[in-house]
Amino acid sequence: MSRAIAVLGGTGPEGFGLALRWARAGEAVIIGSRDAQRAQQAAAKIKQRAGEQAQISGLENSAACAATDLIVLTIPFEGHAPLLKQVKAAIRAGSIVIDATVPLASSVGGRASRTLGVWQGSVAQQTAELVPKGVFVVAAFQNTSAEVLNGDSSVECDVIVCGDDPNANQIAHALAAKIPGVRAIDGGKLENARILEHITALLIGLNIRHKGHSGIRITGLPEAAYQSGR
Ligand SMILES: NC(=O)c1ccc[n+]([C@@H]2O[C@H](COP(=O)([O-])OP(=O)(O)OC[C@H]3O[C@@H](n4cnc5c(N)ncnc54)[C@H](OP(=O)(O)O)[C@@H]3O)[C@@H](O)[C@H]2O)c1
Image (cartoon, rainbow, N blue to C red; front, side):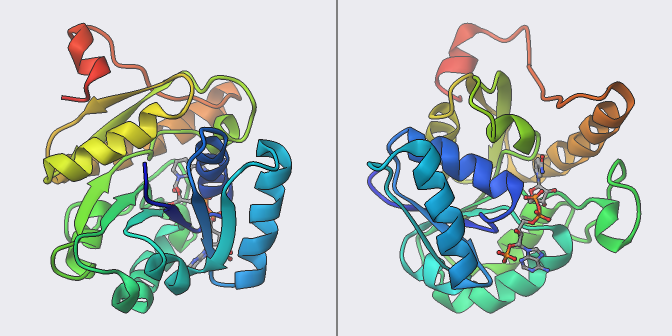
């Protein structure tokens, strides 16, 4: 990628893990946070782990959005709509927003193994309503375990990419494929994000039941489906 990747909520385990993997792959990454200093501290930790050559910086969320046109959302559902409203003015037309947010019931004090209904159908569709016109939204990484991303081993899971713009989908696909062990698969329209988000609650339940860090692998598709993301 020639553009930097801004990871909003990149101080938390999911965003940090993705940022770490992309920094290791040679991508320029900006950690976004509500607090610039916290973002810089997370960026420094990633530099320690990824090496001095890592292109990683930390900025307050709006400044991170203003600095690039490729944005990844890794924030808890309760903060999702308020954050998007806050950063909206900094997101330029033509940007791509990749949403990994899951509407877990824990956002309102319930169980993390249950999801909440989202009026628009999914968090990613809510994002599509909240971003400025001309911004492309893609759903991906909801089923990728932060624990695994934050380790050093190959991630060994599939990332299903859903979105309505083929170019934006392709960019998300390429980003997923930068993570060792990840295969990206085209999952169709953005409306399918609803299903991806629900799968996460199931995975969390499996993790609790079996004490692990589960992910998903899709079998039985032609080889091309795993190679091209189409
Ligand atoms: N953890 C996983 O294994 C995993 C896997 C797949 C998907 N996800 C999804 O990815 C998202 C992030 O997961 P996580 O475990 O990294 O979450 P998290 O630790 O709860 O939050 C991530 C970051 O979001 C920011 N944040 C917290 N509350 C906020 C609010 N009300 N408004 C704006 N920003 C807020 C915080 O950064 P600052 O305080 O620095 O702003 C925090 O470090 C969630 O939607 C989760 O469901 C998680």
